[in-house]
Length: 221
Image (cartoon, rainbow, N blue to C red; front, side, top):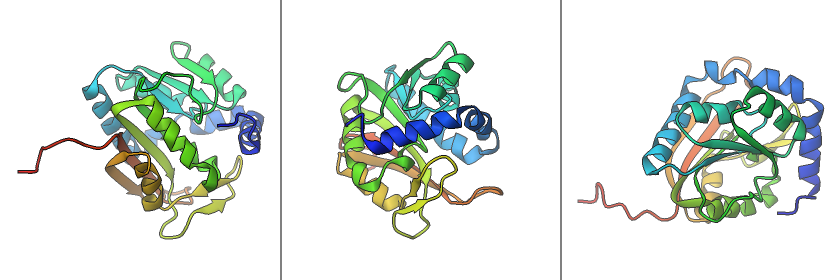
């Protein structure tokens, strides 16, 4: 994944410019989102059950979700394009590891991670550029490792660009996003659609996937 891609630079610059405002806006956002917390808790439970491998948050921003993963018992670290947001994350959560980098090119070995969370970070990637990210997620996850995606769902329409408050972003049909993941041998574990709350514009989509084809026999008798 080219680190000099124009959309990566534009995204990093846009978040750098509003880092403090954005961090204040999202820091406590999970408090009023019980359904969102529930699927993150399910992700954490599945990762814990599979072993003690580290977990990455891809596009961690100011680090509040990485800290939430830590509170759920995971060995979590965060990666983000924005140096300003990483500075905030390191200040707010000095006990956690945060790195400036692209989720399209993790600095980890093949199969090193037990889980990977992308919480409203894939939304800024142009649709034609997205497939290699799933290949990278597949590379860094151990066999059976779990991937959780949070995104804005297109509510029956096609992939649609919208005027995100920081930088352009895309709403995805949940089936189409799941199909992209399946092409990299991710197996769907579950999904959750949540209707917009007061003050939200769009439906929220959540996909929980497992890396690699399943060999389970439970429930086949």
